[in-house]
Length: 497
Image (cartoon, one colour):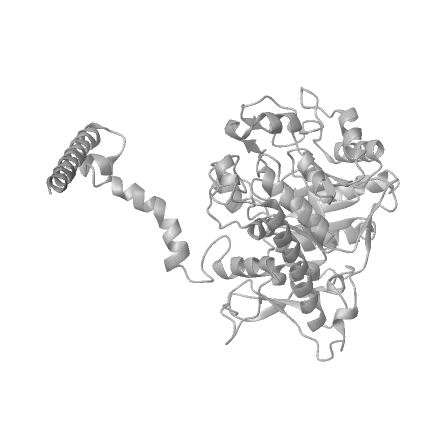
């Protein structure tokens, strides 16, 4: 009994002590809030005003899980994310009782089904497409239609790169390095690699930021490295260079990129030595001559006028110059953290820009030689299929594969606190991402996406996705009616019209 009384007395003491400390803490916070001058809410409502910031922080998570409807969230809603999760896990992706999508919402794609689809559509394999057949010593061929878009080592974690590399090899698609250089983890899985040359030339740079030709040739010597992509701009921040916080610049990342350890890494908003069409062609030809492999560029399109100038310069050089491919990125944002005005308001979306690029190539007589890769918010089959209707040869996605890795859209990509281990270098958080398991999910997502895009194509009477044309897709207008893409973008000579 004596022991019980002692325990109760100790608990009472601890309670009083805790209450006293809590009261003292409230008094201190009251004084701090009342005397500070930066925050009006806290000054007028000491202590309780702090709850505003707490609830504001939690608000996005409560909206995601409790309040937002399946089709309401941005940039990707729950229905879209759930499709990716089910595809990546190999779970049945059928739904019952009708569509939950607002089919009368402006911008919604509607595909025109054919009354006489093939009886055995699954027997038609995707066509093999060759990039760089005319100008390269080592052209690249693939029959895959969906590939992994650029995500840099540094921006995403080592386990994420490992999972993407192995998963891409299992699916037979390529993996774009992003602008952060080629790490051992990109090569480790055995996937085909597209090496991206960003404006800072990470991985192939001299100390002053110019191109190191010897390093470039060393990269090209890897058989897995199939193509080189010169990044002019990206959807998250057209007209602004990339930024990697110093906390993410580990010794390993610094070695891969060729930059100082622990220092914030900023890339220029454009290639310093590429300021016009002629200089871009010179740079493309220089990289292709040094590597012998296909070279293209990635850009957000604001106008097709500069492309016409570029293609006119190609013709003035006899036609045997210029890019082997063009990656058209969408102006509605991407995986990178960026200023809101750029992410929200600069650059055309891929829906509008892709037909402009296709038609400019046709107009210049270069469409057969120059392949077109579409990029931007295409994580579900309908979005990918609409890109093929507009003329794409390939589609790439970054965020779709991030969701396949387990991304929950926590919106913490730039804070090194990603809860799923994808965009953080915190070892504790990375532990949750097991590359062997996630690689399976990456491969399943890629395969299911290709399967269901082909299903849409077959419903339209097309043998495979690259046979889709603009008349196969209609876009819902503000008044609820639909208009065929070939009426919105009617260029008569297009091989996709």
